[in-house]
Image (cartoon, rainbow, N blue to C red):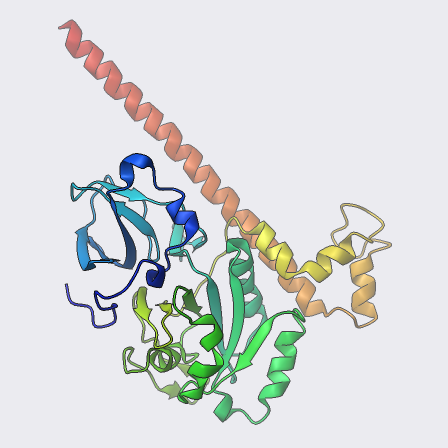
Length: 352
């Protein structure tokens, strides 16, 4: 396997993102096993990296569900693979009608949420990504691209900053090498950064700048709607010029939240705090008397858009979580039935 963006063999586990939390999971009988970081997941194989270099590992049905960024312990046997407990995990409901939770990335330290300063700018979408970051307990950084094409980037920065005064918001020109310097504090050796955003926001351009070379192909902007063409087709880790690891993801046309209630509440902490002042503990903020949230909207301290976004994300994650839980329950019942049938058939064979 040859991967031009993997580190050379002269690196340490720490440079690959190994941390004490992973070392603490290694049992005494696993000390001779080899730690490996998953750099890419293909249909039938994994691209992994160890201190000794890069390897290709076949995917087999007996393996646990593995995603980019996972840490594995490799035993002496090629198929002896242990998945270490993750520090963080990004997942979403699979796109479309499929009732599956799709793993996006694991063991990420910082999430760059990328949006462009054109018609793509969307506060609701940013709140969706922020909920994902908060649920995973990963530091979010909002990166606003195409600042060179925007007359008043500070106006947009101010809008995003109002979502959370402590939120880091940075406007960059992805084509300018100075963008890498602006984001350098999060890209140091040992850190893993994920980069997420919808198609056409300039993610591939930013990836090339952070990596210091032309790695991702880039698409042009359609003049009618300011949207770019989707250019990244898979998730993979890359070594950045500042020493950290960058996980690029395809543009997400659909990011359905699941099992994310705490993340949503964290993003809308202003609303959850106001709700504590409502007259009724079960206030839905839909016209009830004594509603502190409605009062804040009336006096201008809270935007109605933000309340609508909060309620929508809460309903969505609750619906998806319930659907996935129901499917998991059905799958467990089916598995029990299959095992019961198989045991019955074996017992009958033994009587013959």
